[in-house]
Length: 299
Image 1 (cartoon, rainbow, N blue to C red):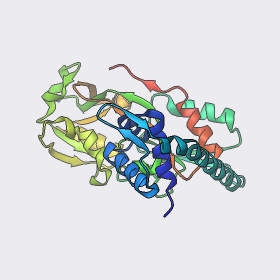
Image 2 (image 1 turned 120 degrees about the horizontal axis):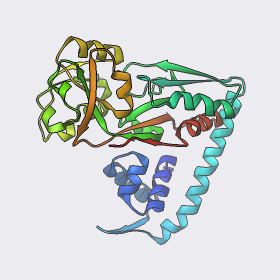
Image 3 (image 1 turned 180 degrees about the vertical axis):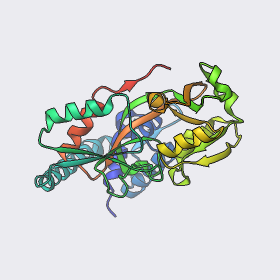
């Protein structure tokens, strides 16, 4: 049985970081998953590639021998896929960008301006996709690239480039008890009724409910919403609240709805994603156009 290119990519990343923790973060996969794949690669090749203990990770002699060959194979494969993708795209000059809500932050204007400089003849189209699909159309092939929130189900099957890391805020109706506050600790929100993404959003649903930061307490009476308009309607008609990214606060500010920062929560991460097998240079140019200057809002 031959080694998978994915496993070689994992191996190269661990070799470059000399840390399974940092490599897993860079690959956006769980550390146990990464360790399992490296073990399988070692079993397949019948050698130990890394010496590791609690503090250090070092390449073995077989690992040192494999590293340049693995890098060359991955580079050749990427170049081959890019050439094939460019040939296939030669007859088409259109890219579709998926998103679940308007991404705000001036990102779309920046994307259009910078991408037009690189690809003036390319027709850039936007498509709204409900939150039932956390990949914003990528998984079903509806779009070429998408703005997504991390983490999402099946994330390891896609390339992701982080665009922004931001604090989480909370939105609510203007007669809610939070209306008199400038900010709030998350601990004060544990008994609130939260709006939730559909079950199909998986880890992303848990993220916007801050499930891992509730100390084991389950969210209360969650109403499911599939898009921004349903969210606005649910906020306007009840005593629900919803978490959102700081960069989207202006989008949620409308008559009858307010939003304030939440203290005590980890940041949320906005990224641009594309399929691993898609090496078209137009995709590369689009990703560079939107992510050349990542935005970080103050906490």
